[in-house]
Image (cartoon, rainbow, N blue to C red; front, side, top):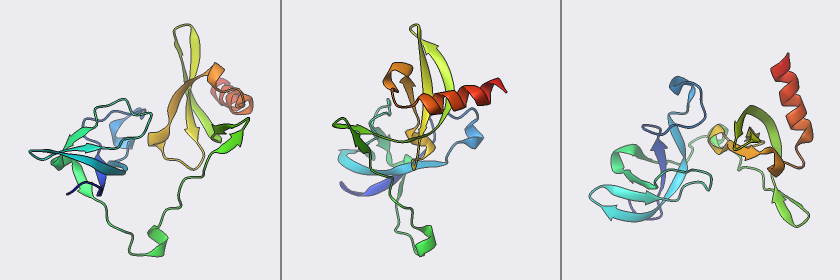
Length: 142
């Protein structure tokens, strides 16, 4: 392992938004090693929304290999749309809701992205998601 290599991160000790551990991914993403800390520890470039420490032991990292068959190739995630000079991503669905600091937040699943990219976003931060929010409340109430 060296700086610049892409690694799979094992899900041990990482708790995301899955209700049960057995439903969660076994590994996450293909993170790039940004720094060799030493003694088998590496700093990874994590996703922006991940609020965890970015240094991991080599036992939690697995070398990525290129797909051998074209069926194994995953399409890259879609780029954001530009609306009013700001990046906006398309919402596939709203999965949950919660109330924090007197404000409703929704767990948003982005179209073309994996579950590890799901984010809790306040309703005020979703001005163009009215239809997805209404679909969620229809699903929940039935």
